[in-house]
Length: 205
Image 1 (cartoon, rainbow, N blue to C red):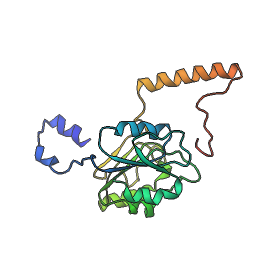
Image 2: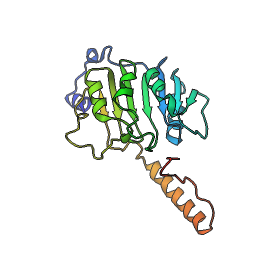
Image 3: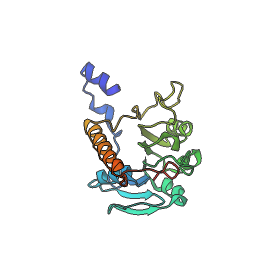
Image 4: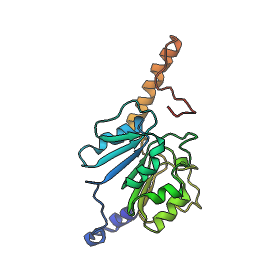
């Protein structure tokens, strides 16, 4: 919003951004959840010269640029080493509120949190508090625990926080893909064949 206002006012102020832009190169990226979303995230990290680690209890496939993939028991460690923590996991009994105040506080000072799967995984009040103190320097949030995000949420208006209304994937191509999957699965269902992309609501897989 600030950039939009600056553009409308035709302001050119290079100094305003001096030393406020963070290099991702040579940083450690933690991917929480290495399903379809997490694997796509890992693809986009190729070429950025990052060290990438992941948490997933039973990954179907581990991309080559993931140094190591651990089970849920190593979540503390992932938080401790991640300069950028990207939340790609489904909500399950194990992941719900798993990124609580204690774990978020373990992250290196000046780190970032990116939430692209489900907001219920992150303690939003703790996240807001840690951003206010700059322990976590910023966040990009596309999914929140309650949607729409309540107006009283402490996340609104925070410096270095980008909030989008669970809309980052809503491209024309996404809708085309959904229609193709539906048509294909309908055909399979009518032919009594196994469906694709079936998800277990309990395990999230």
